[in-house]
Image 1 (tube, helix red, strand yellow):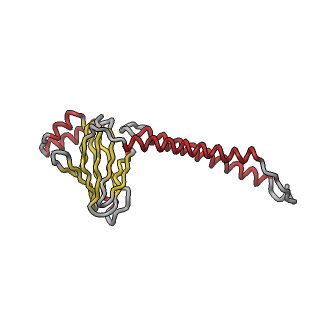
Image 2: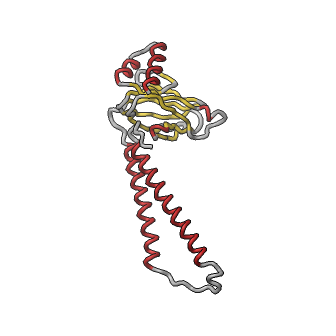
Image 3: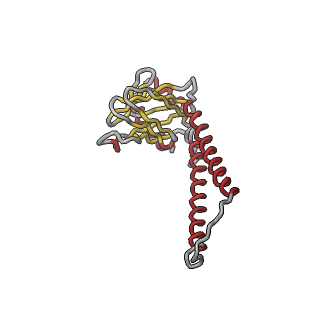
Length: 216
């Protein structure tokens, strides 16, 4: 967590961590209280049941506190969502096409690849569409996931902060070979990306990939 390889990592991880801590806290608290009450009010110690009057302060407390916590979780999620839909105007557009069972990426100049090449520290706008069934574009390291539907254009964006090679997966079951629907995203230094965009040979591209892997 908090590896900070994209602009969404910290906000997504913070929301997840807050939700996890709150959930674990109440799991432990409720479990302990259950055990205490089972021991304290067992039949041997209390052979005759007695009525217990309600406690207004306690009832208000266990309504107000969870409500506040849920609203805080919502606020974290809402802030993260607003960031994810606010695409910078200078983002590099890439058309992403999903089909059983592969991804393809088309750039402004018409270049089409099966691997996503992007520059470091520059926003990238993904224009997602499917030609067959429902898919879900997922880059785990970037905390980015967007469902992709037939006949529907969907938008996602990110900004990579570190060069390297990262996995792209489909996180929505899309048929027999769903588990093989993997690709890669290669984050390049700005100069190397510009060189690639203006045309590199296959040998140069392979060499660049090897250099990127060795740097990481």
